Amino acid sequence: MKAIYPGTFDPVTHGHMEIIRRAALIFPKLIVAVAEDTTKKTLFSLNERADMLRNEVSCCPKVAKRVQVMHFAGLLVDFVAANGPAVVLRGLRAAADFEYEFQMAYMNNKIDSAVETLFMPANEASHFISSRFVKEMARLDGDVTQFVSENVAMKLRSKLLCQ
Ligand code: ADP
Image (cartoon, rainbow, N blue to C red; front, side, top):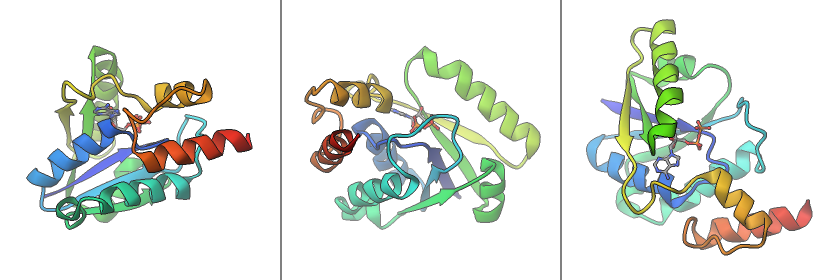
């Protein structure tokens, strides 16, 4: 079965890419679904977030073969119904992620019982990386190249300069 990995990806980090690489070894097809309707106020537009992801994925041909970057508006369960059958994949970092992720998985399954969520634990090296902190660090002119690719770091610099 294929998997759908939804998120805001504002912007994509090494943590997201680590999940994508591992998932691409397991699932024959992985749809990375960039959310348009998010409660988070995003720094990057929907197209910018999706383009950065496509760029990261294209750097690894083995992964690129199995991964498709799409975007969706509205409910995730509707996107899954339209593009499934598929399981929803989410990355889990520290315990802090758990409550929110658990609730979301439960709600989605309540709306559509065909929607199952699988969690993949973050690895040791990237479990502390979050898009939010990367943006905060970049705003304060910190070096974020440990956490995101050169391309994303460059996009962050030019976006923040324009603000
Ligand atoms: P959302 O706004 O939907 O939480 P994010 O872009 O913040 O979107 O995250 C998308 C998914 O990636 C979530 O499941 C999140 O827990 C996971 N994730 C984010 N950062 C990491 C990381 N460093 N390691 C593993 N998973 C991560």
